Length: 195
Image (cartoon, rainbow, N blue to C red):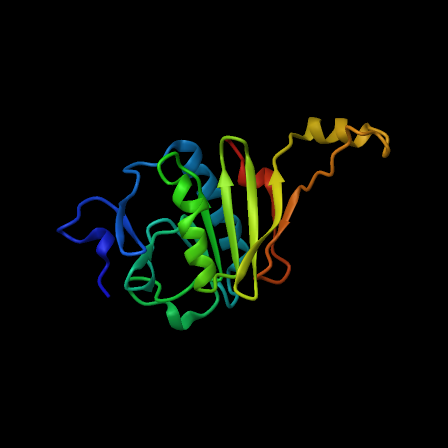
């Protein structure tokens, strides 16, 4: 398949979602770029020399003739689906960083399509409220594993100082364990660094 997102006929980037051309934002916001860069950096450092490989924004994923996506970040463990031009099949993990123009699709139809094609783990990153929704695929269906929120060191210390029976005490998760890679743990504060 050719790289439709960058052909001469189409100077702007787009995705093909359920057979419909959906134009993508021409330029990501700084927070969007930082989040995807931070995640890609953490994935890449851990995966260096390992079986799986991380890819960042700009690499096309072809699930079928009607569904061609450009995820913000992904992990591929099956090297057979990597070609010189694109990815021909479902990534193991997909990360989408929300943009105002793509949020509805990322949380809706794209999530459903990733689920259908067997993506094992799907992250939705929100740079506004600094949260990450992690979905895991179980028997062909995504379920929400957890929502991870960023808290400053000061907020964590204040929360830790509360008595265990205090109704205001929160369960704060500071790390995300990546299910598709043994021992890969990403710190929430690293995802939202400089955001």
